Length: 229
Image 1 (cartoon, rainbow, N blue to C red):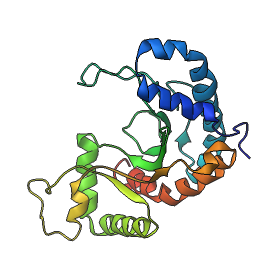
Image 2 (spheres, rainbow, N blue to C red):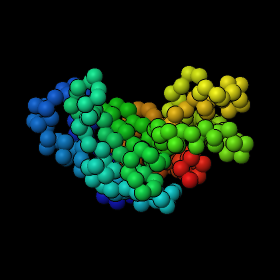
Image 3 (cartoon, rainbow, N blue to C red):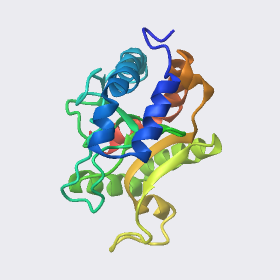
């Protein structure tokens, strides 16, 4: 079922718990074998299993089962952060839609902590050009209504709509507009988050993820067509 992916073992969750408690180079070096066996290896296998299934949902999905491909580095970039902890305490996977791997295009994300999982689709933030295009699309009668309908449908299905970062609509926009809430977004995603499901410890996680990715994929499709097109 999982094309080589057999689930995350208890070793994975022990490693994630450990790096959260002991976020320093000495601890990491002492547990590098665990990192390779329980973090890197199953993550690569999951990418290889999920990638082909996601391409059935969106033919433009790209994935690479390697670090700095679909698997993000565990090292944190601390140059501009007050938090100087050297390592992430979660596992990040990214399946992007389009030519570039970065966040300037929609895609499907997977983030797993020791006790929590988040998966979904969309764009975490918009650059200036995409933000301008997004706001115009929200105000557009056809595109805006389509997005509003998607958001309402996904909320009814208990999916979260993320990346609403503003408390007031941007200057120059009508605060009483019927879709004013959507103008509070500077990124847009839809997803699921909760406690680690039991499927995570078996190959069934692939099907579990695909079912949820298929549900939120319309948000990513809308972004490709209305914002990135």
